[in-house]
Image (spheres, rainbow, N blue to C red):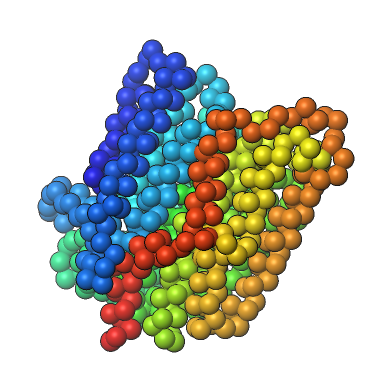
Length: 499
């Protein structure tokens, strides 16, 4: 099932690229069908997923030999973290593909690149081979590059180039770190399960520190953390709305997912030694992202900077859990919050960027000064915006609260001062979303946008699906938390605490 969830969108993507007679609607139907089938495969795995106390670290494992001389194989499997993120990603891709988009006369290519990106993104989350992880990590850059470059706005080519160069530099740092980690192992193997079990590098010697630094820099660029974040706002502003939703909801999670899966799990001792500096960097991202977002006059750029802020929460939780300070329950809470934030942020920010795309398709601008009084003409759009905004700044009863409560509660037990300072970010985030909502929807309706239409049916159902999960996770988070806390990340953590 896991292999099929990767191959179905990839094969459908290839079919769209070589198909010469398809109309836009036919191409869209093929893309929706392939995306839905891929998600269905993941749902089948989810139904059979064991969350009991005796559950294995990885489930639904499949392995086929590939390059035996290098210890590389096609290995796939899931623990609770990877399954939760993969399900969120699959659903977000389906909603992004369903979203009505201006394909500029290249519908087959547009939907083909979306399916390609879905396949390689799921491959990254589902693989258990470190070299295959790197291959998928790099291939995601290709898919997003073309989506921004060919279907973006005025500065799309420059934004796509900046995105590609920045993140490629990060991936090269990750490659060097992977080689350093694997070569330190007793046997040549890229099997993640073996590397987690053997912990090839530890301590703070020069070699271990450099390998960890390579991972931290590479994943910090992808996440992104300050000061490696400058590629993100421009990429978001220039990308079409559905591509922005996937960029924020899925691709940014590759940085934090990789941070947990590789250095957190495979270099526990070294990671713990540098956890506090990482927490400081995360705190800077929280405050910087919120404050800079507050000063933006571009709707999409403002939402983009809130992603820097929210990914800072995620990394803060990871750092607190990895510090190996305090009780086991506190560190479990911090890590659970970080993973929940990845899932919640995917749904929330994915919805917000689709909403931003709705604004642009109707007005042709992201300039906040051009908006006002839309509550009278777009009540459905207003309701969707405020639900996403409330979830983003952590209103109780919504997904953002479940994630951020765990992050700050866990961090408070490890780094109480950092947790207290980080709460400022929540206050600023609330202010910036409420101010933006007031500017867009309240006051006098500007004549130039008085004829703007409300959400169409083709926009309502993708937004409804994403926001329904935001509410569902907020009210009944137990199923998600049980899934997340099942598997390798928490098993290796409990083992290290017990030692």
